[in-house]
Length: 505
Image 1 (spheres, rainbow, N blue to C red):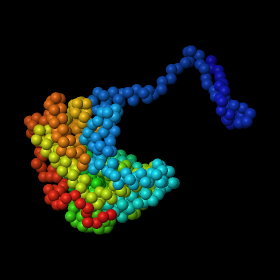
Image 2 (image 1 turned 120 degrees about the vertical axis):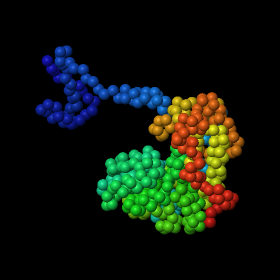
Image 3 (image 1 turned 120 degrees about the horizontal axis):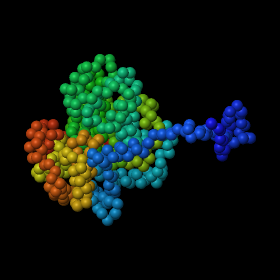
Image 4 (image 1 turned 90 degrees about the vertical axis):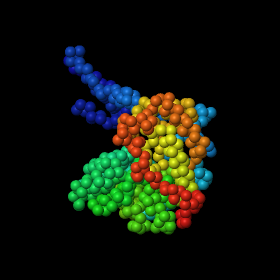
């Protein structure tokens, strides 16, 4: 037997009940439920959401890839030093992307303080509503000039810039095909996925494989080659000029992520594409747009304000029509609160400072060389590359975590372990990033500590990898390859004392 039981709601509403209609002012809403006899009762099962959460966490713990976050508080006046949760516990940070210490640069701080006092903390909204201001306009003009492009657009991060731009382009070009380097960053991959366009993956930095895949596509199909200049976990550098050659040959656009290169390479810090024509670009007037240099041949450049420039945010730079279209159509730009005025002002000052002064990046490069050479001398397996990244191969998630913990607890050194999914399983590593602020004493302490930890945990050294993988593994046993020749040549590093480049912004 079934009977109806009414429950009175506190909400007054206008709702149908059976065949009657109850006016809002005279009756309260009645919800009904059905009670059944025991013989008719049924057990209702609902999806167990919590079990999914737990299962996924259990998997991460089981394969030792679960990520623990250390409470590391970088000290502006003691860079590259930081304190842990307890202020008395000081450590030296060796894995920050604040490569040049611009987060504490006095000129940047001064401009940010003044802007903060005048305009407050928040931008007030999205650029389309109330967040558009003189600081955003000035920063975008500076970024466009830095890369010798017609225009630029600032986003809340470069992850958002990559995602929003690629998703928009791929959805607008009919039958668009992305050709993506196999080691591309997650933000690039997500943007291509969100566009729902076809994606073809080519082998990392393999121009022969890229050409074969480009040649397989009809000439009339819109194509975008997506790649990075410096790959942050390996330190490898892409063959930008050769990729531009192929893109022009097969009618494709080039989309270059310079996130780990801006501020670090080139006479003004515009990145690897600028660095490849170093002397010509050093003499080039600020902001001149042309088609003669390698950087000019790249259609879309993306970069970050949060690494070498020491602030936060990301951007794209390219043709005016392209930038205007992304500004007008990309949800990741339209519906995101814009960066605060103080951040925009600080980023502009940081870019202009690095465009005028090359001393920080010269010093950072010298510290990188010193660190790599000292580690190699200790038989530590440095994954060779031509950039400022110093990856140490461990090859085991649990050992990587233990090594990171021992360095922090016993030696006062913070280096975060890198594991899956950032790198493939079996390729776990420690990623060291020397900065302009590390001293010879810091480097000597680092080498002693890593040597001791490698011995304590019995982690494979270069000689051990050579014995079990004579063909080489991730290049560890093949540092002499031409592709590992440093981007900053000896001549460029010794051309002059740190100085201001000819044409200031």
